[in-house]
Length: 139
Image (cartoon, rainbow, N blue to C red):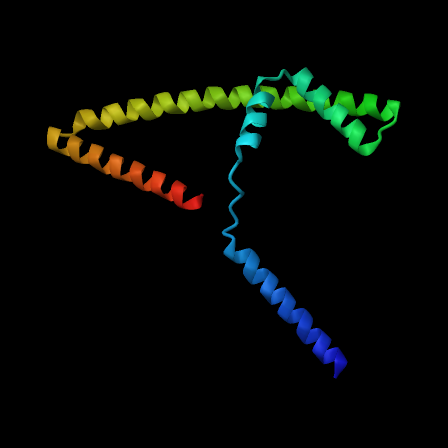
């Protein structure tokens, strides 16, 4: 009987835990002012500075030996340089996407009548407001 009660208790605990997790929506928490500031500071750093900062943090937190510190420093530098290259590629792709999107929008508007353009702009404004309203609800 005790085994059944224990099993039942475990099943209940797991069910409550899963329900609670599912209700959170699975969205990552909003960034606080502090994390946004540290993200901006991190973006201004060179890959070498980022790697050195990360290495020093790992050395302190993990108690790395001198040899481990040197190996980790090399790995962190390589990783930081790779991430910087990808970051630059992403920025270039975003700029290209914006250009193409703007050109497409201009071409579409050239096909439309004045009345249709106004209607399109109205729909775009409504969409923008709805999107902003959703972001406020997430706070």
